Image (cartoon, rainbow, N blue to C red; front, side):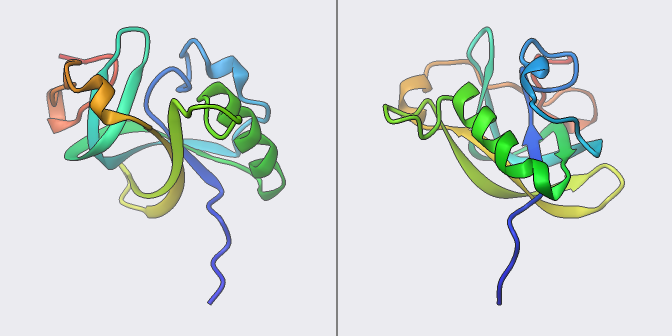
Length: 138
């Protein structure tokens, strides 16, 4: 059975509203909701890295119009140094997210491509409410 690609992108760092890279979104979101996914966040200083893990990561789910998904992913792939003909800094995957209202959906997200390179970087610990978010909200 055919499943269309997700029309949402989960962001957890500099691409969030108010983040230094938020102006790089090429199209406006239809809506933005606070959401969570499972993983581990590492603090790399100027930006975070999402890895596989069991923590609850708090971020934003940007829902896009179907016609805007392709262009948006092309732009964000460049921003995240994914699939640009060299060594990837991040890789894009489809993950399951849950909005704070309880809706579950699939979304694109960028994971750090080489976790072994950042094994010595600080893990973002859960803050109030049990969520891990960058920058840390303790």
